[in-house]
Every structure is written in C-alpha cells, then in structure tokens.
Image (tube, rainbow over all chains, first blue to last red; front, side, top):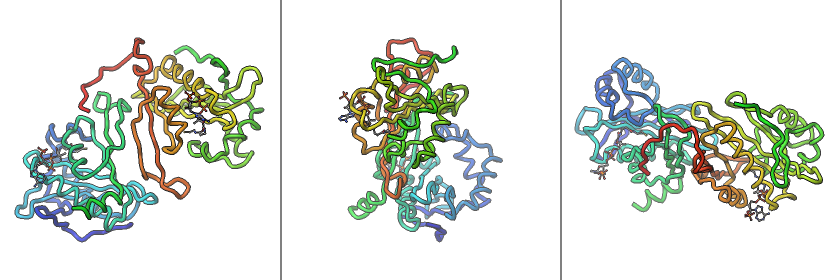
Length: 190
Length: 198
Ligand SMILES: CC(C)(COP(=O)(O)OP(=O)(O)OC[C@H]1O[C@@H](n2cnc3c(N)ncnc32)[C@H](O)[C@@H]1OP(=O)(O)O)[C@@H](O)C(=O)NCCC(=O)NCCS
Ligand SMILES: CC(C)(COP(=O)(O)OP(=O)(O)OC[C@H]1O[C@@H](n2cnc3c(N)ncnc32)[C@H](O)[C@@H]1OP(=O)(O)O)[C@@H](O)C(=O)NCCC(=O)NCCS
C-alpha cells in the first residue's frame, strides 16, 4: 500500500532517516571501499558517484508505485555518524512483494546494528506497507549477509548455481524470504 | 556450430517441428489449466491454439538469445502427437537455457516426457553448448517433480506465495542442471569455477 512514513524511525539504539546532501562523505567512507563492494552489484563508488546516489535518494523515502524504493541512512541514536544504510523496494503491488537490502560500514559490524535496522524495515514492510512477502538475496560467499537473514527469521528459498556471470566469474546466489504470517508469529513469540 | 538436424528420434518418439495439421491434437492439452500456467500466450479457444501453432512452427532454431526451439512429440507407429517440449536460449553471456514441456494427460505415465526431455537436454548441452538449464514447475505438481528428479535435476528454488496466479497464492519450484552434472565424464568447454562456501 502507498506509504509515506514519518521519519526518523527509531529502534532501541538506532535512528533511520532519509539521506541529505550533507551525507556524501559519510556514505563515501563505506561505499568507496573495496571490501564493502565485494558482493554488491556496484563497484566501489567515487565521491562524485556517492553525491549522485544521494541526490537520487532524497526522493526515495516512500512508496507510491511499483518499483519505488525507500533507502534510509542508519545512525546511532547517541551519535551523528552514519553506520550504514537499509533499503526496501516495492517489487509487486498486486502480490504485495518487497525486497530488503543493507550495507554497513565495517567499523560498525559485529554489534547487531544491521539486525536491528533490517528488523525495523521488516516491521515497516509488513506493518504500514502491508506487504505479504519480503525477500532478499546475496552471493553465496557473503556469509555475514546470509547469517543476517537467518537471524531475521528468513528462510532460504533458492540456491542458484552458475545461473549468471558476476564480476567475471560464475555467480552463485541465495534467495531468502519471509511471509507476513511468519513475521507475525516471530513478533508475537518474542 | 553445425546446423541442427531434425527430426530427432528417441525409442518411441519422433521430435519434429510443428505443422499446420497439428491443431486438433494440440487442442487436447494446450488449453488445460496445468499447461496454461507456463505458456507464453494463453489459449482458450481453437483460434488461439491455431495462432500458437503458427508461432511454434517457426521455432526451429536458436540463432540468438531469446529464441526458442519447440518440437512436437510424435509417437512412432501411429504418428499420434502426444505433447511438446521446448528449449529457450535465455542468455548468451552465461549460456543459460530453459526447458518447458506439456503432454496430453491421456498419454502421461508412459515415459514419453522422460525420453523427449532427455533428448532435448542432450541437444542443449552437446549441440547448443548451454552451460545451465532450468525448469519451472508448479509446486503442487508431484508428477512433474518426480520427473525432474528422475532426470537428475537439482531443486534450486522453492518460492512460496511470491506471486498470484489466477487469484491464488502461487508456489513455484525451479530445477536446474549444469552441463558437467549431466555428463560428468564428458569434456565440456568450461570457464573457471570459483570456490564455494555453501
Ligand atoms: C552484511 C552485513 C551488514 C552484516 O554485518 P554484521 O555485523 O555481521 O551484522 P550485525 O550488525 O547484525 O551484527 C551481528 C553480529 O554482531 C554480534 N552482536 C553484538 N552485539 C549484538 C546485539 N546487541 N544484537 C545482535 N547482535 C549483536 C552478533 O553476535 C553477530 O556477530 P557474529 O556474526 O560474530 O555472530 C555486513 O557484513 C556488510 O555490510 N557487508 C557489506 C555489504 C554487503 O555485502 N551487503 C549485502 C549485499 S547482499
Ligand atoms: C507430470 C507429467 C508432465 C509427466 O509426464 P509423463 O510423460 O507422464 O512422464 P513420464 O511418463 O516420462 O514419467 C516420469 C515420472 O513421472 C511419474 N508419473 C508421471 N505420470 C504419472 C502418472 N500418471 N501416474 C503416476 N506417476 C506418474 C512417474 O514417477 C514417472 O517415473 P517412472 O517412469 O520411473 O515411474 C505429466 O504426467 C502431467 O501430469 N502433465 C500435466 C502437467 C504439465 O503439463 N505440466 C507442465 C509444466 S510443469
């Protein structure tokens, strides 16, 4: 359903808010890194590319039609710096499908921030956006990412092998998904 | 690549391009809901099937990605058309292909699809140098699942409620097969494979 959330979204430790023009350096600090980009579709971004990306994101804050995406900066509530970003894409209006994404700065890995922020995006997707199913995908070698999906209670639905070329090699990919009912029972059980 | 030689013979079948006179036989299965699920254009009436046959009659070679080869399964002896199989060249960079099939329910359980698909898989890997084949199946079609397993395809994906089909939540399975899995002994032209985690 069409969605224009009130920002910021708050979790126990984090604040999720739209990107602003002042975020270019903070985004470049992680999107410019080779290790962060390793399994991303985009190569490491230059500062100019980050500036352009942020320009686009200033409008990526709500759902109006299929294909729209919400991309949010994640900050600690007690601190200004950006620790990462999360996204939710409206993949199908008719079948109420969404796709979840995340990228965090390596300085802020290992503290559960990605788990906390992506859980907030699931709540947004299944709550106000009224989605039926949310899926996410990652390279099979991206162990931290699929472990994150398992922490979120998502199920592995697909394991594609050599179905495409990715950065000059055979691609191997996982799809994970969670249905609205599964999300509801997770939230009610804990 | 040498040009394709048709028809292809299996033990009990001849796989040949479609002909105008196939209308009657194709109508027996093409309009069924189980078949409609995976066809590119829906067929409800004879006119629709006639149109589909005229398209399939031209699907006799794979020249460029996006092309489909479609063959009628014709029984040796009585020349009855019992079903169809097709191979779509979906991607050139990664040499990907997709198989589809449909059979007249009155002719199922006789091993025809096992034969026809085996021949088409041979053709895909040996002649067209496909690297990976995939097949979509309805998650509730147990016979199709058994057929895939019998042919040695791997279950790669099990989607639940990822789409609506005729107003109901859908369940879809994807099976896949790599060239070297089909013919572990054959010398396949392969690109370097990277290490695996899972
Ligand atoms: C994927 C990615 C976000 C995962 O980061 P992460 O730090 O493993 O995930 P979290 O922030 O949820 O932290 C979980 C870790 O913190 C630990 N942790 C510490 N405090 C925690 C807390 N309060 N709550 C939960 N976990 C906590 C957990 O035990 C876990 O550690 P472990 O993996 O050693 O078991 C990160 O690797 C990344 O940004 N990668 C690069 C970009 C990328 O590939 N994006 C995805 C493309 S598909
Ligand atoms: C499932 C289906 C496609 C199988 O085609 P088929 O020509 O009957 O397949 P085969 O005779 O080669 O049999 C393959 C296996 O399927 C199973 N099977 C197929 N039809 C069966 C039937 N009527 N009863 C029991 N088992 C059957 C058997 O396990 C068989 O293996 P076996 O020979 O070792 O016993 C066909 O029966 C059918 O139901 N078609 C309608 C649905 C359709 O067209 N789907 C296409 C898109 S998924």
